[in-house]
Image 1 (cartoon, rainbow, N blue to C red):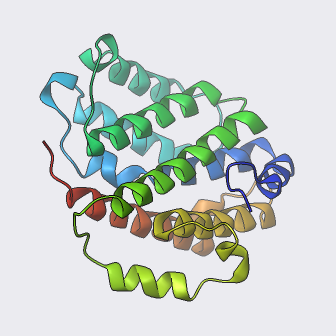
Image 2 (image 1 turned 90 degrees about the vertical axis):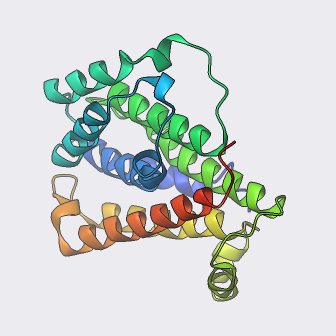
Length: 223
């Protein structure tokens, strides 16, 4: 199966209401959160950590997908940074941070609408970065701790996940993505899923995965 062009994903998103699509887009960005918050950014980017923290915190408080003035103010504070007025040549970790920031900007543009294309774009962002990190790890001599655990996970996956032919992060992301979409579709479009026990479990899985991604990125030299 080709994870780049997965009709099953498109069908799931078509079956969702706008609030549900917003929830799965948020969860996709949640899987990219640790590298954004857990590693320092270059000083010349001029990113205000408080603006970034406000943006993420507000997004956690408003999961209905409605346009929100406080959220847009946080976006405005973020995009006023020198980063957005200059050319940058990011290293490995910085490239993940930039893509995550871009994901939040895309989310802000989709508020109040969150159509199928916008949702797929954010879900695919998490997929692409997972596959990219796998490729970096495979082609590098850098030793990333936890190889035995990653191999054990891949040895135990089901045939559906195995059919994608992906490595650890790509497979694990699809595994969590599938659980998120299943839970979102099972809930009403009006339910506050992420404050429920099931939702908290999903957020925990996203955060654990994101932490593993951060740990892997920290294994690589920064210059």
